[in-house]
Amino acid sequence: MKKTILALAATGAMLVAAPAAYAECGSFKMAEFDWASGELMANIDKFILEEGYGCEIELVQGGTTQIFASMSEKGSPEIAGELWVNAVRETLDKAVAEGTMKVAVEGPITDLGEGWWVTQEFAEKHPELNTVEKVLERPDLFPDSEDPSKGSFMGCPAGWGCQLINANLYRAYGMEEKGWRLVDPGSAAGLDGSIAKASERSEPWFGYYWSPTAIVGKYGLVKLPFEAEYAGKDNWDGCIALPEQDCENPQKTSWVKSEVFTVVTDDFMEKGGVALDFLSKRIVPGPVMGEMLVYMGEEQATGEDAAIEFLSTKGDVWTKWVSPEVAAKVKAAL
Image (cartoon, rainbow, N blue to C red; front, side, top):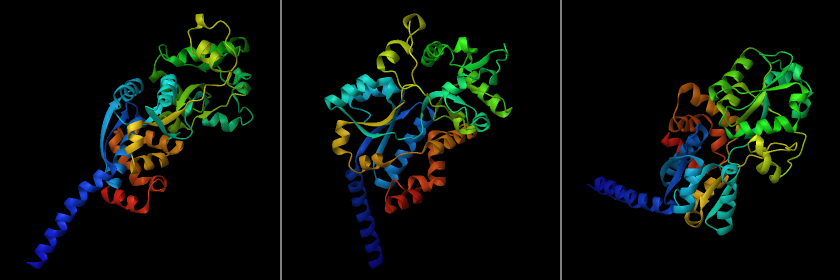
């Protein structure tokens, strides 16, 4: 009887303690962006916050503009773990200035961004061609399939914003005069296929892409820096990013810096507590994210499945974000 009473007392204590733990952290809505890395980040955060800190997290699916508008207008969701800032730069700056949103951490994923890339094998064979400008002087190394006398530069499919950017940079750098042909891959699959084909056949490839992505992770693409400095917002937003007829005189420039922030509402900044502390320390190395995106693609894994894989196999990464006590709780829940 004594043991039974003690057991019941212990159970009662646990039931009382459980709500207290949730109360300490709170209940929040978090964006689950509709791309692979966005799904993965949200599910990693959800698992750690719920199992390690006792939070209650509801995921809200959507794209950048949809999620941001909801955060700005309704204050929900309270957390956006992987917000690509360039798409909402002006409105985010305004919201931060007005105090309705805060940046919890800049760069939750390292080594990300858009630009011009070459294959890993090409970079290893030609270490001297280590900038965009140097590669542009060697169109002969990238013979075009339709006209081998010209070099092939793979741009973006029609309808993508980067198609306009690549076309205007093509003019700014005088690539036609240098002997280059700007190629439209036709689709996302066509762009990915051109990279896969070149990498698997040890053929040279030069063109546009972005990271973090499964393609970059799988084939180890190398992003080339521009020697030219960023020529300013007026040149980029007022010319480079516009249709060709609206950009009469594009200036040479590096690619605008791609920025990704973890953004939260002002209400969350006030009551986030341990959840905010965790998010401020959570940074995923780019190569690790690339590896996980390859896993998601090859295994057809959901963000939730991939989060379990990440937490099970990348303890050397995520345990640095939390205390040993929290890490033990997360590991026990896997």
